[in-house]
Image (cartoon, rainbow, N blue to C red; front, side):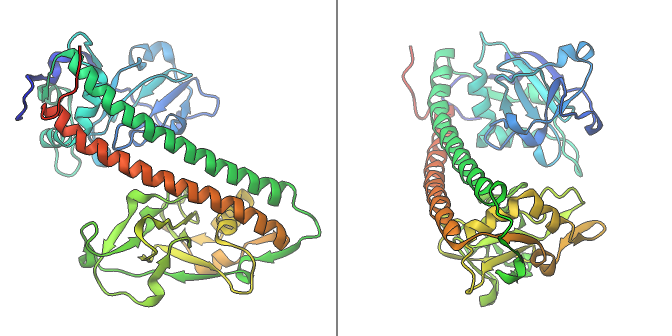
Length: 407
């Protein structure tokens, strides 16, 4: 490691390190007494999704030594999630990190846990962890190898100052994410109130087939995939979150051949039609294509493009929220089939029934929902700018190339 700071080994700043306990999904319970921090609940920037953690009923007396304490570092140690590093803060219940994670308690007279979180989630820290992983089919990290990693060790006041700069950027990013969640919740709540709870018995019962056209995406070749920005943006199965909504991190770029029917436009609804297994976490969920990748792109065969028919007054925003209504989702998922890979055929997407509200009510909702989406996309733009600034600053702060004032 080349650095203007002094260096040390990670093990020298740890006061305690331990693998998480083993527990199974069979122990998950809505009224559980403990929250389970899974590898998937930590993102690539070290943010922990506390709301996503499942609850379980476990013997806490037996697991007392494994309960996370504020400012513990949790490092995911195996498989596709290897090397994600979260800093536990607090939760309303005791929290355990599972057996696929390692908990590190930091000696805070030697190092700042927030500083270490940023180091390990940066390029240098990530490369270091992946370089020491063992196993070919399933790479793994262990405690001795992680303890051996070299880390920068500036004076503690400098560590805290660096952590403060990076944390302030993440705080702004988190605020924008929360604003977007609020905007989404507002539109979803309004839709349910107007079109589900206040639906009238005299509203006509109709089918999706009367109001939408659905199109199959491009069956592409892997050889046509291109580097970021070197081809046409291709929206794909990974462009939709489990539970619905657009996932910008899932975009791919494609430089191969495609036809006009494979073009998708910003504002269009896309719907997933494939899922491994039968848990219905992804299949049949919709997303609205954002403007962040330009006005046009293409879409893969694992999603459908859904467009309102010319004769209907229903809009993309209305259709998006309609597909999220549990009563409609049940109809969509009941039309899926397949043994290992679950599939949703176009006619299965067109069959669901719903009550058709009056044009005036749809128009009023469209104005509100579209404004919420516009504000959310502006927030996403700000998030990308702040993330780029943070990611550019991080290695320079860690190396000492850029200094911050500290006492």
